[in-house]
Length: 275
Image (cartoon, rainbow, N blue to C red; front, side):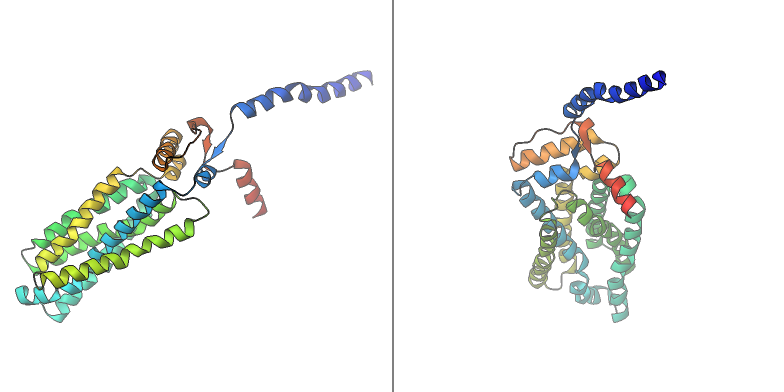
C-alpha cells in the first residue's frame, strides 16, 4: 500500500514540475495563422493596387473574348466568310475555353496560380498577335482556339489567386468590385471598333496590347501566400506577407517561417469532429 501511495504522489507532482517549461516554450514560439495575419492588415494601398490589377485583367479578358462579332464584317470582305463560318469563329472561344478550364482543374494546385496565370497571359498575347496576321480563315480559326484556351486559364484561376490575398471582412465586396473591369474593357473595345471600322486586323492587334501588359503586371505580382504555405514553402509565404505590409506601409511583426501556419490544427480537428 505505501508503494502505491508514493507512486500516486509522483504522478501528480511530475506535470506541475514540467508545466513552467512548457509554458515558456509556448510563449517563445507563438503560432501565427495566415488568415489572422491577412485579417489584421487594414485596407490600404496594397488592396487598392490589387483591385486595379484585377479590374485590368477582367478588362483585358473582355476585349479578348468579345472581339469576334466586331470583326465579322471585315472577315466577310476579305475572306468571303459566310454566316456559318462566322458562327464557327464565335464558337471557337467557348470550345477553347473548355480545354483551358480542364487544364486549370488538373494543374491549378500542383503547379501554382502564378505560373499558370503567366502562361495564360503570355500565350494568349502571342496568339492574338498571330491572329492579326492570319493568312487564311482556317488559320484564324485554329489560332482562335489556342488563344481561347490560354485566356480561359486566366478566367478560371484569377479569382482564386486574387481572393487569397484578401481579409475575411471585405472579401466579398472586393471580389465583386473586380467585375467592373469587364464593362470597362467592353466599352474600350466598342470605341476601338468604331474608330477602326472594317480593319479587323488592327482591331485584333489592339486587343493584344492589354494582354501583353497583363503578362508584365502578373510577372511583377507574387504567388498566393496560401498556395505557398500549403505547398510547404512557409518562408516564401512569410516573404510575401512582408511585401504586402511594405506596400501597404503598415508596421508588422514579421512572421517567421517556423511560426506561420495555414490554420489552427486544434480548430480543424474540432471542426472535423463536429462534422
